[in-house]
Image (tube, rainbow, N blue to C red; front, top):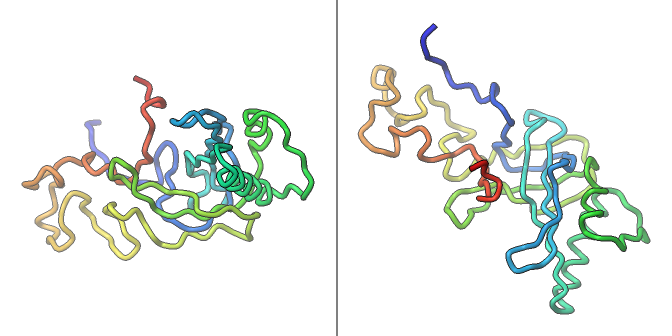
Length: 203
């Protein structure tokens, strides 16, 4: 059998979450405590969607910084972590006098609901960013908003991911017959990936 296939996003390794919205999630084992670029302690949380059409999909690299450089930043840090522990269902008065690493290890596997939206990174690519955290809801609710610079939108369908939507079927039989680099390289836009820091690359 010679090479040839039809792309199918439901048949991939590592399911992607392609819409903003509200998701029931659990904190993944890949979550870590580390230092930020400015040397501050930081929890980096990865989430796995629990239900709905994106069940099993990952929303990664939610950075929650602990900053004691001033009274104001200390109070903001307390609010960030109190918001997280409240969403996880910890009652008032729970004592977390421990290392950040122990705290992160202790919340792995716990469940909550997060609201995410698209945000542009420094490299111009968009990724899902956590905006709010709250207790689990009845179900996850994607809101139909796809990646702003992506080719897939809630109201559009196309049989050719490399062509223009107004082309006829006869004109799109070969997805590589285009004149611009943007349309000839299926990897140029990288529209369905999450930004990966250099430290996480295997080379």
